[in-house]
Length: 319
Ligand code: NCD
Image (cartoon, rainbow, N blue to C red):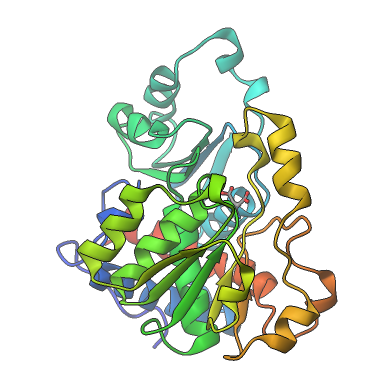
């Protein structure tokens, strides 16, 4: 029966804990979460959603812009019967008066049972968790991590490709700054996929991340500057260039204008029927001319954010 997969606290990797990085999870933890998300999706598809989080409150503290992440978290909490408080514009909060993140979180943990935070500084979610009396979800800490995105990216791969392992995955673009690529890469590595990092030399993934991925997980890791190296991929993942992480606007413009584009021509040349994924928003890197193709999965991917975040909230808050 959908949703009947009850977790006892001992086997539930999320119960009562903060979710700060994909690296805190094991492969079997990820499988467990995706299983719960599958149950949530079946319930959503049937229009019969249980409400185990009645009387629980989620606070969303968003110090950076967001459309999908905040709205899908809020939708997920409300579908599970819970309530939502929070802000989407930190300029309306006491942080403009100079209040520290630590103090804000200390106070908000009186008002909510779980805190979802997005903040421009790497490590900010860890800092928040240190000062919170309730579990914290990292919804993006600068160029650091975005673990719930990685979980629904994995859900997307399973739903669209039918499996989670032994795939060739091309991760394309702003490898240095995109937290979504970094989190997804670790999750993919845990499942033994081969990764090709394709990006301009100045925006490559730091060497220590590449070394850890290949040494710790024993997977194939390649780097390239040419989009042609994505032609034999099963999955192509292409976020936008992360404008807000560039100190120099001219440098951003240079990269944005020479950026890789996935278009009809690329799809015609690709050899393994690849799915095209993006955490969105897209700018110019995915041509709208492919939107109608079945392999253009990015909008379905955004939709999978709801069952996956429902699973995460339920597992963090209920046994
Ligand atoms: C991403 C983010 O904020 O890291 N957005 C999202 O959560 N879907 C990707 C991006 O902004 O490029």
